[in-house]
Length: 173
Image (cartoon, rainbow, N blue to C red; front, side):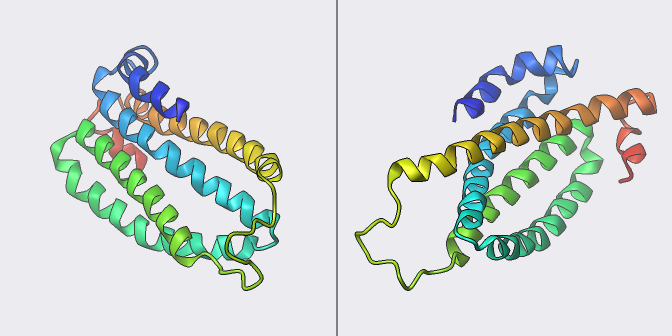
């Protein structure tokens, strides 16, 4: 949550200093909202790996991608006529939708353990945190790097193409 708040409140400054475009603060703030969902999803991935059900987690991610990818592409096509900043914002909304959908599918499709009795934990909180904290830390780092990459794409495209309007055509859309 601290990374989310840092990105949320630091978005106006970061978009001006790093991306040289203050209008990218809104997409950065939307990407900040993705961080808790991405972190929880990664923690569940670590949990499923720890209990030996990594395949199940992978099978949950397939419908997430099959649903969210066409929606993101549709949003991208619909937003292109409205300009580059609208397109960046729409892409960030699509990424947020994908992360929320992934977490929802995990809760919906998680395997039920018939050996688990209600009210009795099979592992202590200390054991849980030994597994979850390193996984959450790596997830936060990964999401920060992905966010940085996604936010640097517009700047690189603008530099490569010469103007903002042709930047997305260089990207292949």
